[in-house]
Image 1 (cartoon, helix red, strand yellow):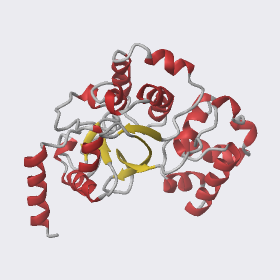
Image 2 (cartoon, helix red, strand yellow; image 1 turned 120 degrees about the vertical axis):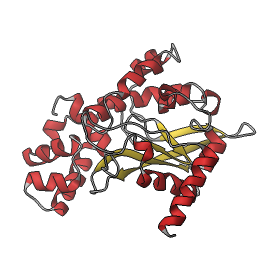
Image 3 (cartoon, one colour; image 1 turned 90 degrees about the vertical axis):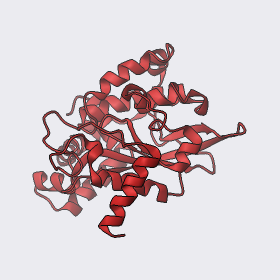
Length: 284
């Protein structure tokens, strides 16, 4: 597709569905767009981000784009048919926040929404602490509590982190279990932009939780060697694999091998889980 055709396609998308809705940056004081690093504002004007949004309709599964505040920026047609369209529905920012959408405007679509949101709340705090979500997302989190008076109590009672699965009620009343896969969107230099693509893949069979109960996990400091603990701190701080390798004075392959061994020793499967454990034990 030529650059002129891409531009016309992007204009067509804006005319059909409305503008992108992302005006967040991941850190305080960052200059320029967090995706392309050009000085335009807001990020919704980013052509690079617009092309990412256009590509969502190429996925055969429901998919959506989120900003550094964990708010919807764009959804594809398959997601639109299942969960609604927070962009076309012109939801205000605090209701485009993913947990707020699930237990607020689109509550009827998510029969286990309260439980799933309650399980992910601790992870959101950890994502902010690790620098992968903008701090202002915590303000949206507070407003989310007001949408469901039972949510804070459910969050206090839960003993598990969210395992990535979502219960979705299809038209006709059938409930389907899907698992979310998150793909970070890189900035123009290959770093972290704070924007993410989430893809919902159907789960065809019973799924074992990805995260063990919090109280059943081994103590991080006792489970890791001194070197592994050093590597874990770097990853939990939100650094990329290349950045971790550079700071630790090792190759990228060695840094990755350390990370896989850390996952194995702690019985976890993602950097988000690692960050949660490290923050919980005051190691970062």
